[in-house]
Image (cartoon, rainbow, N blue to C red; front, side):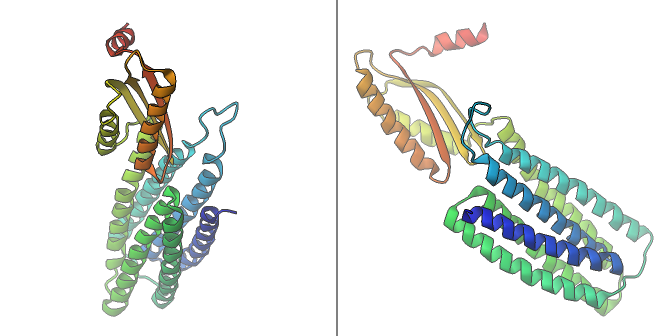
Length: 297
């Protein structure tokens, strides 16, 4: 089993343990903050399972049914994960507002503090492991997983502080107010995940700085007199680029092919952490206007 998959198995196992611990204490104590953390850990479990599924299937070789592979499983999983996070945050918000309207005293505060301390330590160890794997493999999914658990680490720390304040001051409103803050933070965190996934599914172009870097490589090739129809898209860990490069009509196909290979090698160096697929159409003249007319009609 590859290191990336081992990392998702470890994160899934840890998330499962944390869900059981936090959910038990959250229900018995009546703490919205601990319950929110339990639901967040449940989401972590779902995310880690999705990540394992995505890593397992997204890198399968193309076949007769999927000629371009299954790399879009990753952005699809991201959209689903982000939606689940948002819906769960709305549930936490509903529960927190209900507790503000109808205040009830928390029970088993000491037990809640112990569970959150244990959760904080376990999450910190997991973040260290995932960060190590992300640096070693440079895998996008593991990087996202490490970042997600880092936010959990901050969340657990905030809940610990809130429980300590409740224990010291006896002010019960601290718990639902923190629940509202966590819910808002979860929605805020979910939005960019959903946005990035949707943009990938819609085949959005690469960022402007990447496009400029590609254009510069092509323009610096003296034998290429012009280029057009530069198109790019990203799908998970894969980048797809196509362009029409115009060569002198007298150049041999062999020489044009060598130059195209040189351009492709330079472009690939821009995306060392991605699998890059480049298609260069070698044109003997600039047919961009003809292509535009064909697109119109």
